[in-house]
Image (cartoon, rainbow, N blue to C red; front, top):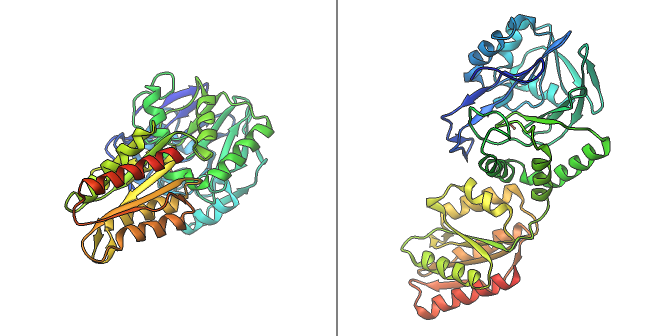
Length: 393
Ligand code: FEO
């Protein structure tokens, strides 16, 4: 993609990754972008780089605007390699004695990644860098997404370079929220939050309060993934506030796997019972849906109900995979339910229960276990269990 001038003398020189479909276990059906920003002033600054295989494209993009060797310094907002992978190449090109600005943790983490003695300038919140007509101000944003993460704010232009924050895995020729289909972008922003940032929701709420208290005026938010928010940056900020709080929506997710369709029948009866109480319900067969898509629906669901057959005295392995994934993302204040069919030993549903308890879910008791194949009485019990969940939502 050609560089896009996003404001006078400020360019997105990043790249589009149209073909990525798996981002460390997160399904990226819409591809992604690695955004990087060039600010031309008395000092020329590059904010972030791109994933390593796209380094040459980054350099070509910069070269369409200036000789890359004229870059005076680099700001690294985040060490993760989708943003730092091309840093060694850039530093080698511009001169390894040029200053590299990052957070204190960024200096440590970049050193641990690349083992190079760059001229690190570790920053703390409130530090500034004068570029000439413009000034960069830095804000540490630990755990949004890594301990090294920070935001860079361009004061005079009121532009926030927000690294992973407010990003979306969304590949597009359109670059802004007023040119891209905004609802599709918002869906990808929600998926990003649910799968990358949810476990840091309490920190994000505090960060949003901190940004408000600082009185930062924001005309444009430039994340390192996806489109830039310029028409309505308040929309994504409001969405982050909403997603950072426990959901109060009347919605439930039913997640299950099945061996001989018994747990599937149970799941469908549970879901029908929930729906009978006027609650929106999303059933997911785990092997038909990616865990990251299920998690997107979990984000704003009040209840998560999980069904598993018993296999070799364990819950089904795909159910364990999903529960491990969800546990790591720490959803807060959820109602939980559990059910499953079994042949003889029957541990599956009880093991699901234990995992949901470990996540501090408020469980709707008792769950339902059925031996072999559910008869109509068994399905009625599942439906009744769904209604009980629905009433609690
Ligand atoms: Fe887009 Fe945490 O990296």
